[in-house]
Image (cartoon, rainbow, N blue to C red; front, side):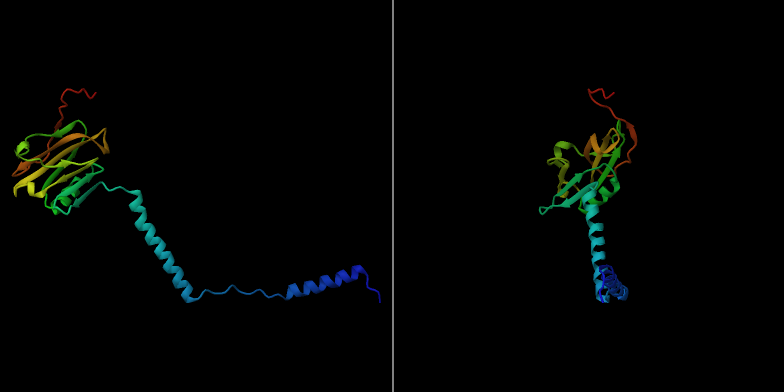
Length: 187
């Protein structure tokens, strides 16, 4: 019997089709409990790293207060916001302080108490940039560092002046009054 090319090709196709149809679809292998726990642990670690790293990278704190080995305190103010928090942090480091951030063009009515003369004591010393340091030993038990700063054009990241002093005894609350700018017309 002679098999034509066409018949031979048809037989081969049928044989091939029979093997393809006989393939069984297998379910995907199920992950073991150990794999599930490892995947959950890895996911939790990634979430934890992101939660910790993102705030550290994307946010600059409004201020920082650091106790130095010699007992002095270094302060950096990046934004003129949350003055009560800064007061609290300074108090924790042994410096009683009243911090007032006031609108541009205004200041606190003076005097706010008994002023300690500047030549007698320098309340803070400037460092490079926005940093300054304070020595808590420079203050008597009834003395308070008083800082009044106003922001430039309402921008809390920029200061446009202010005053620093020491008051002996009680410090009066800040009563806003127009600031007087000596010799410079700001308008």
